[in-house]
Image (cartoon, rainbow, N blue to C red; front, side, top):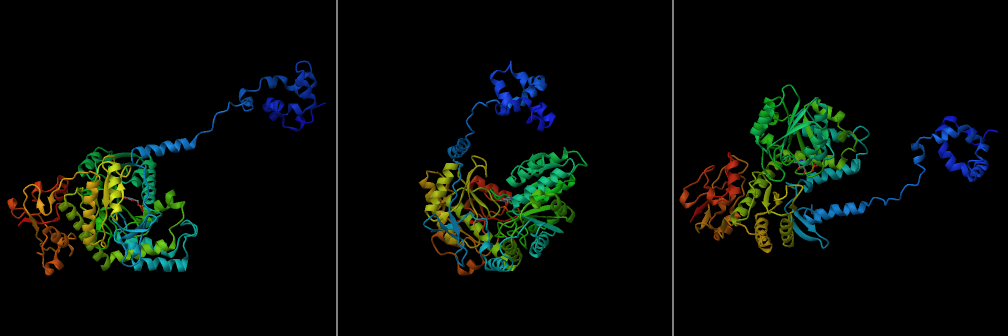
Length: 578
Ligand SMILES: Cc1ncc(COP(=O)(O)O)c(C=O)c1O
């Protein structure tokens, strides 16, 4: 009699899994269960075993393995792993504790914030909302009315319900300021850089990427994700770029990738030279203007606009999250290139589009900063930046040679820089300590980003607090001057102020407050105060030093670097012996 159980199964299945079936279900079978007890003598009674005995004995090992008892291994200890990771971060002081700071946006309250659980008021020195666009009434109202009309969310990807008239208007506005035929917006500029570079470098056949050593993580990720061949050139070094490109094969697609204003040092790249070299070797230029858009150029389009060389850039990327005061990122370039990224970049395709209030606020901010008010804000911004640099110099505090609005104060050691930041916070000044991985170990710093709404009085307060914080944490610093006196020759200095209209480094607000503070007497007339712009350097032994001819020994070496590297512009303070 055939077995009613096995007979209902597919014969191939029975052949393959015979051993498993026998082991799992044998004890339920009236014949086999008896047979188990006397297997050997009674097995012939089982019609299945009778017919399939040899097959069972030959069943492959893999078929039976899964029913063997597995030795008990303790489950993976995920928490132990994460604990070790965090401990390592804490041990090298790079563990990040976010400060609680709610930046205030009501009229007159920018750049103040409420800090900690007691909601103490502090001045914010490290926001990338560089010109206060996020709290400008024009920008806020645009966001509010967009919410009223269109709600808070985009409702989908650009392809599915997320593409509004405003989305396209914003892209058109971005294309216009950058003088490009097309633009494309992304959820952030990290995504814009990553998605664009990974897509282009992947699809361009045999593409070779030339990447600046100082590039932001977003570009590094994009290049890495493309798996394209890459070469790294020394930061802002056109001759190294040229050397690498000269050794490259001709007729192969190439991308040269770099930033204009460096996010952490404030250096500005030799844009024209780098673009010319790239084009000489048939490469496309991808230039990140994230820390320049809104801040430089007549319409706030960045360093390329300021230098009148927007055509040199093939693909420009920018953010809506810093000077434009909102969130989001973009690229602008030729229509075909932008359409290619739009059609192929997963980071663009598979994500929800930017929401109406963000689109409206960004559009308003770009228009605001492209106009007269934007130009006035930029001039004031540069003036206050220069005032801070000058104040640091006079106080003898260290600063890295920045030629932009970013003012880095180096304090070596992640622990030390965090302690100084805490000391400043106690004194009502919030600046974030910057450590690894944002900068290399040993290059820790405080990164100041003063804006047009910071006042000279606030800067004076900051400088006093910084000096106290350095002392409190036993950090020595070489004082270039002390109380208005040169520490080398003990000569008392005064500030002399001349006027120059032509450069953006000459806005009408400079040095007065500090000059008065240093001099301790009222030597500057109100008339001069309104027109003060340019400050240079002089010394008794070096009669009327001019730009590019500044006597180095009276500056800290890093500061000299900055003076020397920023050739075309006149710089800072005129210090004369009394
Ligand atoms: C140079 C640079 N590029 C890109 C980004 C990314 O911009 P977003 O904040 O819009 O993602 C940043 C952010 O800090 C940056 O510093």
